[in-house]
View 1 (spheres, rainbow over the protein chains, first blue to last red):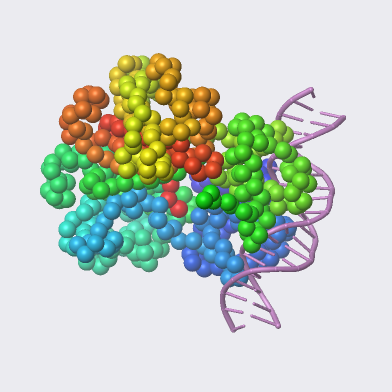
View 2: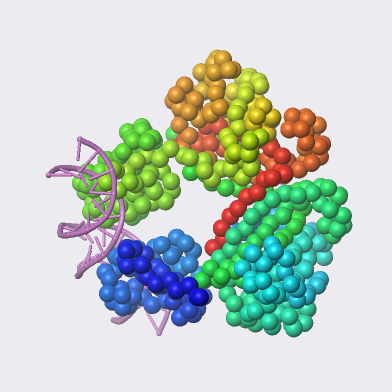
Length: 244
Length: 244
DNA sequence: AAGTGGTCTAGACCACTAT
DNA sequence: TAGTGGTCTAGACCACTTG
């Protein structure tokens, strides 16, 4: 049975508005980077005052779903991944600039996922997944090793695409080729010691510390679209946080 | 020359209000855990409408400075350190419960700080600092090693206090004995390999991965009160984050 | 000039807490 | 019952962007 989220009458109006706006964004009524209806239109449409509508939008802006721009409008925000843990690997090219690593797919196969992947992607027992192995490089030197799983259902085109057609960024590819849009993600960080294969790939000593980042990427409805684990040398990694 | 932050007339009223409320909290007009003046009183006092005042308070609530409680009032929040990176060490006692490690001061001395500490605490060239070495334990087993520096000025009482009088928590001590209140902090995380002394203290192999957390603790005015570095075994450490 | 979000008003009524 | 913050209204005027 499908889960039907009916608007809870007991919730404050501005929270109901937020939920309905998320629903409409998820349904594709407004695409990423596009302006949603104006505050005046929305407050009229919902029959609430402008203040109440603004409070609903405030919540979505705080959640990173929308951004406002005075004089221009309110826009559906594409997740920027500025806060990704990756950012805290200090990748520098030989010339000293900070650069984004290029990517190369090493392997792709359709698999029956193990229990970890199945539960991360919330797959049914017999559902299959597409598994990608990827290496990311700077100046042709490998710096990150990635294992990526997506559900076969909804990502079928990826099973056939030529490996050299994947490009450096996967999420634009998911969007263009599979019509799947990543809205948010959660990441977790832990530390392990390099085994033989990671050590030789990253050219670091066996048993030296490695940062392991797991990421679950979700669409607007909260459905998992991708699960990945990324490994990189811990040397030079530094992460910062505010406490309040 | 002292920095005088005069309220910027060009800023929106609600931001000016926020700044003035922070000033009054920092000046001790309202103590932590105590209720500030009511919204009605404040909006009258500042001669702004209730909506504008509430927007200022919204900002302070979002910043973690205040908490609101319907029917009771608005309170100055004591920082909880719930988001501290420490939380992601999975400390368990022998019986399996999650516990807070106890603390023991190993050494205390008044020192001329090195450049790192001096700049973290923003000390003048000749100013001195109090240095504490502390170990934190669960079931008498050391799990964290801490090096802590505070400015001598303002923390003089700590230079004389008996070492067994420090207790497990330093911030309440700073507050009670030194009248210094920690309002916020920043932490950074990196990974290193255990040297001989850390390895034997934490009872882990030499060169195994160690999490190193640096923390700068600030008062309400943003003045650094404490700088500390904490080391613990990386095994079992896991940190999580949301991306949006 | 027209249209957008940003700021601000001066209230009203409700839900919750304390006495 | 009195007092608190929580929600909501129905506007007004301002600052900024675009044609």
